[in-house]
Length: 296
Ligand code: ATP
Picture (tube, rainbow, N blue to C red):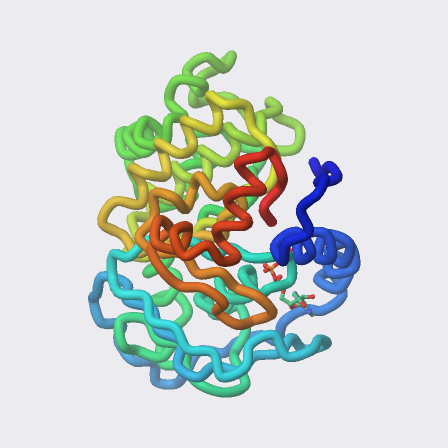
């Protein structure tokens, strides 16, 4: 929801309005342009165990049908750090989280996890290092138990229940007509956006990967749902490296570090409290959101 802001004409506001208008065009681009298929190296390096350090080293990237999004982009995220990516639509936040998952290969530079270039690892080994909580999870027309177990197919029922408890799903699932046996998916029970997101968190719990990628839903949630998701995410984030595309600045206020991206570049980088004190773009976005404006 976006209303006219009276009086103030700061940089953040200009960015916010301008980028909201082009985001509809962005959406149609995304459907047309499909990334290339990535290939497994032969032979692949065995994946080294590690806490999930992420490094972008002088990366340049353009979409197959698009313009250059990242140019000579470098970033190091130490293991265990919780990083929120914020910035206007089109700034490159989604691109960064896609590239960490190697959904496409970069044209120049390297992306490394625990010191190994993504291109040196088998994709299965890379996937084992990363759990993703997407904006909206795909549900299958199967019992909800199986939908959560999808996070780790060999998990026991008890492990699924435990993940659901950590993700604050257990309560609502037990109230469904057939509890964990309830069919969900297209023709199943309809779940709210907040419930679906928590199922995504439960799946990620089961996967138990060192890196957590979170693509926060943009949709507005009621306060209780919001609080449960925040609590579930705080549980899940513990002991992991977290990279989150955050639409709500309240999410990043609990993080170690915020990166404000503008046009593929890091405009601000620091602890959220520090960035607010500095009075730059993050602070302006913060002020706008405090007044009830979308911060994207
Ligand atoms: P949003 O908050 O709207 O999701 P974002 O910060 O995540 O934005 P990206 O989605 O990473 O931004 O987009 C960065 C740039 O890359 C934009 O200019 C966008 O139009 C372009 N882009 C994104 N996806 C594709 C694609 N599949 N093909 C071509 N260009 C793309």
